[in-house]
Length: 185
Image (cartoon, rainbow, N blue to C red; front, top):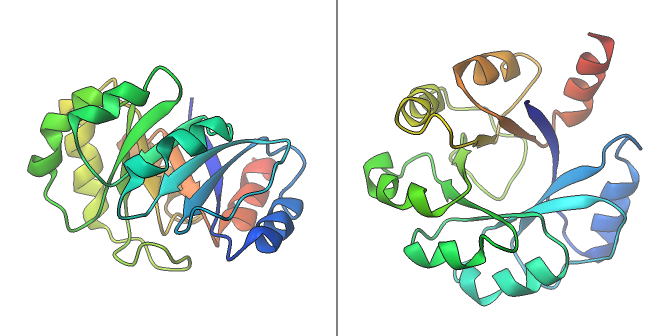
């Protein structure tokens, strides 16, 4: 089953509250990009966090305690496995990072979080088609490992991403357009 997950990049707690209030009521799961740890409000939806911080291990426990169902980090290591009994753990891979560097660590995570834009931490960038080959390779080498694609997902490219083997699409600035499209299909 494929997931289309809205991405939120809040500036502060008020912005997070505002962005959550604009999501359709049917949306019960969201993705939050974390650049700073203090941005948080309690809410009634399940969520995942993409920890785009220098030292994610310092705050992973805190986000699990806050209720995060999934955490994505950019720091590969076998120590990721220690969190897997409390949340799904994903390894986020920047577009310019060699897959060969991270392949040995994929046995220690629950999913791989593939970035499909160069400028992470911002929304509205165009998907880089280099991600297509990365998805193919990951699907070939790890057919049972869920693949999340983050960045530049739009109504015009989401089907190709799913066909290539992506399981989860993290959608930021084009979420409402894609959601509307999917509701009419």
